Amino acid sequence: MLINKVEICGVNTAKLPVLSNAKMRELFRAFVAGDVSAREKLIGGNLRLVLSVIQRFNNRGENVDDLFQVGCIGLMKAIDNFDLGHNVKFSTYAVPMIVGEIRRYLRDNNAIRVSRSLRDTAYKALQARDTLITRHSREPSIGEIAAELKLPREEVVFAMDAIQEPLSLFEPVYHDGGDPIFVMDQVKDEKELDSTWAEELAVREALHKLNDRERHILNLRFFHSKTQMEVAKEIGISQAQVSRLEKAALERLKRHLSSSGGG
Image 1 (cartoon, rainbow, N blue to C red):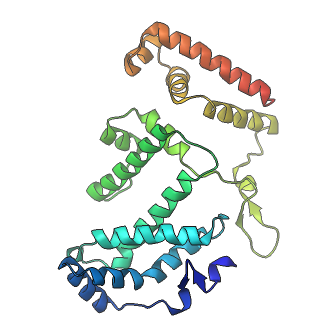
Image 2 (cartoon, one colour):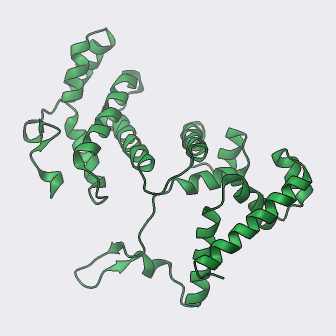
Image 3 (tube, rainbow, N blue to C red):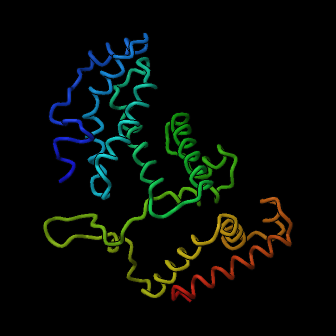
């Protein structure tokens, strides 16, 4: 398996040093005092941490050297921002930053392209989520995140959905030595007809082929039961424009469904 090879990005992983907590604190104090060489020692002494994190992503088919380099960027950000006064282990602080850096890389290099505006909104939502968790010591709701960003709730939902990594229905979620259980087995509902389930997937896929504004208008009109006048006021255009955009979006939706066999 690639992840177990001895050398990654020219670094011999078998010879990576391990720093004690006392040595780490000593180096951090030196770094804060302006010793640049202390930063280099902190980086070198924590590469094993990056190595352990990237093993979580070894089933993505990504180049392990690329993941290691991206993880090192997260490590350096963690070193530059770590505060000894917080009285937490450096690894506790660094791992989420390394994971976050790798996830951003995977999202930005996803085969499914997501618009820059949606990605920006999603990253702001993730930052707002972290801020609210720190403030309230609990997981915030989507409504609270939207309020923090002063954005419509559905806009935040669309953005967060857009950056989710696609999951294969045939990805195994459990294996006890016998037949594996796939995602398909977890999500299917025996009470629903296969045709109904397929139609719902087709509708969702078709919706994602619309642009941001078209999806937003259809969401407000048909999922939140708002009038065209209310939609116009919310997004700052005329009722006539809403009517025209809605009609065009429905026509595009219908064409996408017809071409995919969903209608």
